[in-house]
Amino acid sequence: MIKQTSARNILSAKRNLAIGAIISGSLVTLPVMAVQLGNGQTAFNYPPRLVKATTSYRSPHTPATYYFTLVIPQNAGEPLGAVTISQRENSDTVSFDPSRSRAFLGSRFARGSEIPLASIGGEQPNKPGEATIAFDPPVLPGTTVTVALRAKRNPSGGIYLFGVTVFPAGEKSSGQFLGYGRLHFGSR
Image (cartoon, rainbow, N blue to C red; front, side, top):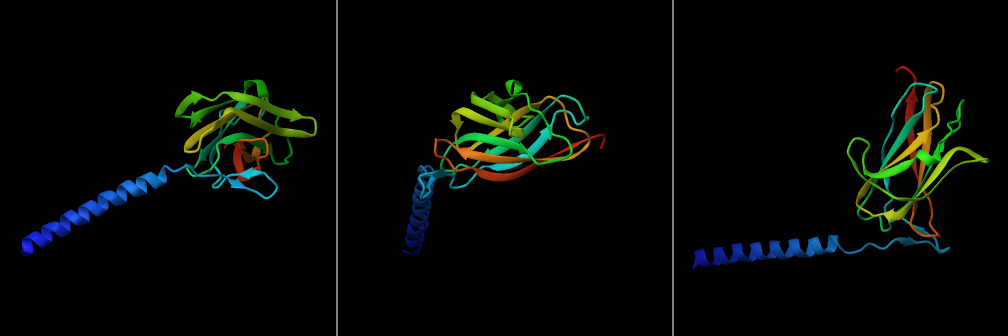
């Protein structure tokens, strides 16, 4: 009698664990809705993270590509619609070549497929050192994406900061500043 009771308890515990795993797994896959602000704008539930900023060449006055890698969390709530990279004021201003900029899945050294771009804006007269990349289609949550901006030439030596702001898909989206990507130019 004791052995039967123990066996039933073990089977019951295993069944409860299996049911719990099925329920928790299905809850993870439920869609997450984006935050709707009072003014009708959409924002991320959990914004992407800037995980790395690198450059193809560190030598001053050399053409280079600047790579900004972002991770869009699974629970972001909205796909990534656009990214703005903006140089923080410094002694030299970077000029971007929008026609040679691109984006792809993965990181700089683990590239996936290229992501089509809706538009690349940059070098507006009132915003030197800034470029905006819009994705077409937007990049889905749960994805790592790298934006590769082509600089016509690196600035003079030193440390330069590039602010990264992300926008969820949609016309009324609210930008989220992620922080600065730090690039060092020179011999060190």
